[in-house]
Length: 278
Image (cartoon, rainbow, N blue to C red):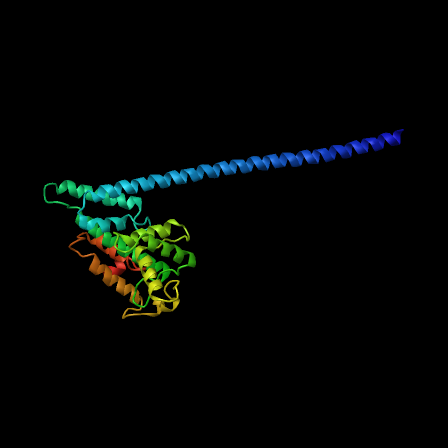
């Protein structure tokens, strides 16, 4: 009858709507699965590129280190190792620049005595170590003596440091550089530990019955409240300026602009012009 036909038609339309909903859901799932697959593939490509880039950088660092060691005397081995101990201390581009300077000097000084590159390595070691210390001071604060305060150590870091200290016992060459590299390789934190930080923390742990988790926040000083004759200069800035004047002597850095730029790199929030005027 007509009524039955209408009911049958309604049932058919309802069934078709259900099937369409199911098909739409399946299609949406397929589209989402394809999107996720493309995203995963893209991430894998990016990760592989990062790993490849990292390997290339490590290869460049190793080649540069070998080349630099071949051009310097045995007494500069530790200084060269310092340059290569941590990318945050000396980047690949900086290493290439240092190597170019060394090669140029060796070419000019050919036949004028052994190891002419030693002077450049010593100056670069002094410059980078002071700049790294100044960077840590600016990032983490400073103690009352003007020395950089280490970021507090976590229990996991201390555990890894203990293992590293046993793995690299006293007496081996560049012990604390190797310890620091081992600690940083674990990737426990977003920041790196310097050889000095590792040595200091190991000494604290050894001398104290309670493992210390870094230098106390109480020794941090509010530099903004410490002033000299000039209220625009803090005690730490003055100390860093004096340190820079002693480290970067005119005899080693005859270029005035370069010298004051290096001095200013040690003084937080001060330009080369500020330092020269002071």
